[in-house]
Image (cartoon, rainbow, N blue to C red; front, side, top):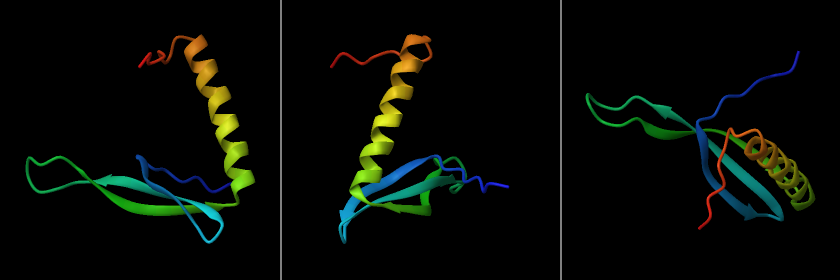
Length: 76
């Protein structure tokens, strides 16, 4: 069985030690009435070539989502 990890987003992406590092965050409840606060949850570390491969895969998925009408291109 594969392990699934949930994240609300990416807190940081940085390059250190010749590796690309993604720090994922989850939103945690804050005090009454305040917006949830992102807290670090997981880190993924990969070589630059793995990062480029992932980027290309993500771009292909974005293109398919735009084509399906799920996303709209931002023309800025």
